[in-house]
Length: 454
Image 1 (tube, helix red, strand yellow):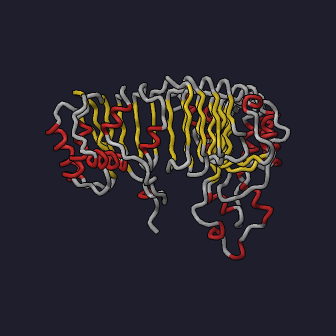
Image 2 (spheres, rainbow, N blue to C red):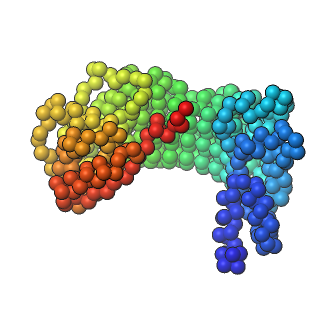
Image 3 (cartoon, rainbow, N blue to C red):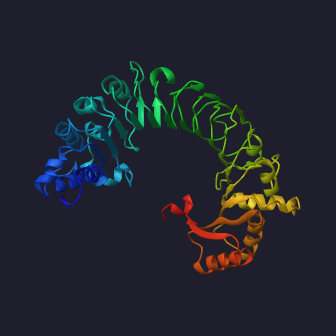
């Protein structure tokens, strides 16, 4: 095989191996494979829960952290990308061990990839050439505060991409990271002063913050930022000033963020997810380039009305969440499909989530919406409920189909539990009544259906 495939392809295959035993097997295939293993530019390794169990039993394997040091030593001249992570424990911690096998507290540090002694042991060996670093800690372990970010900023001068997950970090003593363009923080708490984004990361283009505490002040200002994702930030108010920002995703719980100001003149894609709109205000400044909009809320009409620049929208995705534990604002006005078309005058593509379909349908029935709008949609995607009723759901869907141009692509997304005979009957009736449209189907599976049965 090694004679048929170029070395760069073989190196790419090797870099995708996440199990250390696979890498060891690779090195034993032949001499050329062994030689290539010293040149791999990337490693992505996972500490599996089954391996960690064996640490505390007779004849344990070589520890994960020791193996990382060995690999860093071996690949110090070629390594450009490192990704280390822990496989989440499928069972509670105590379930792994017999009463006489409980590990000592000193051994629990094996679960902390941000321990300074561990990072100081191997990171300096590869820091000079390292361009991408991802560390994903054990979600079930609460590590102490770490100076990992300070160490990384001091020795990884050429780092372009940094992803850190599940850790408390100190920012005291952090140095400027002039080449960093992609920063992703998930479940991270900054225990010192918040960052000055522009000052610490002057070249930053992509920023993803997922349940991060203490990282920012009440304003994000970055002259080069292009993509920004903010999930569940506890802020009463936030101002985003980014002249080059084109893609923004904001997901918040009620009472987490009350005032959001967006100053991004080049913004073309916006996604906002908020359970309900009570007390929430959004101000969008100078965004006349908006083309792609995704809105998710129980109060979908209020959220639509909060977006000032709607005439340029080409693609709209509407979602009404289910099983949130919250109720919609009773004072919120209902919205019909006619309202949507009138508000978004330039709409070409429309995605309608399961509950959004029934919200729009019930609203236009309440308003006796029977006016025939022009055929404007060139693409339509509609999610159908798990409890499908062919006759009723066709009546809900037909007003949308009447607004599709000839040869419009229509994707009907059925729940994974929908019976095949019902799905086929539904599609056949759509095709017979609207022969000029191009129908396709797909399946979806809700989060609740993905949960294991206990």
